[in-house]
Image (cartoon, rainbow, N blue to C red):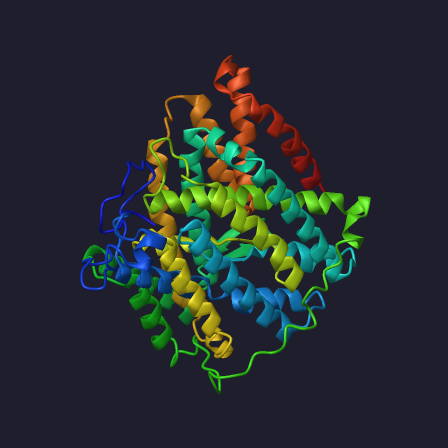
Length: 466
């Protein structure tokens, strides 16, 4: 994410250097235009052209969800064609809502962690019907909505100490970089050692990703506009003769009907008491993942206030809550702000106009669904690695001389990587903050509402125990 080409309207300690987006001329909306009134493009120091590039970068970085999510759901017995169409529609509408309602540059799409929980655990292992699993997600969305309307989600975000907000950005960066390395097969799981191992660097995908990272770094150093898009396009094209990029027989195909999924969610069956741990798992994990992603990405975009908070945070939380409920109703579970939204921030995106452009990209996929398979993971991996590594710069703001600040911050980063779950990492850091400050005799530095938060956190960690 990083500093855009124009200065941020307020001091943002999380910002680090990122590829500029070029001169802001020509394509800027007129001061009194509808675009300017809706998105305050100039007011946030951006331009129409910058927002277009940011939206395209975000779309291309997150387009893989259209392939991965329906594939996982199909393993749970969900019709693949219907799931693909439903996922595209849900992403397009939720991302559009994030742009128009919250005026923030985010892609909202099914979270892979929640989808995997449904496909592999709830349905795959426990043999719960998939429509009942969707009902569990629906009720977690209802809980999100209630807490949002009561202002509790915004309150928790504001009460989160600054050292954890810095750590969230660093932890998210490390997690994003790991995703990039995995997507390019540069690192693989080593079951024998229960650790990560170096992948086969002789494979074309890994070599292409490394070459793409070098290209992106060179373009960023030279301040070339559209560095992300150029890198993704270059790796995709070079990957064709190397067999990394799969070119479909036809880019045009009519979408399947989402009818088999629309409003087939079982909200009543999901209320069984034995399903409560799953509902709670969806709730806590997505609660902290969404909060952390919002803080980190808006910080990179220069949109946080001087206290590290999100102005008007209730709006994105409302969009998130309604998206979770609506997504489950149409067959696209666990809707959340995507980590890949950081591609927009690093391209200079500061407004919801970038989200509108990204939503248009997903809507077009309904006409050219095979296009989503054209961009290989090796092409988006360099962007994720570059963004993730740059986000680590936020950690320099943590006071490592104070162990009561350093330990919770370090735990947030480490457990995000160790557990492979961003939400669990944030929950660990928040719990550590309360406990470390207390045992160090500095309990007055803990906001009292955080003690209430410790109750559901304790239950959440209990449910993680095998």
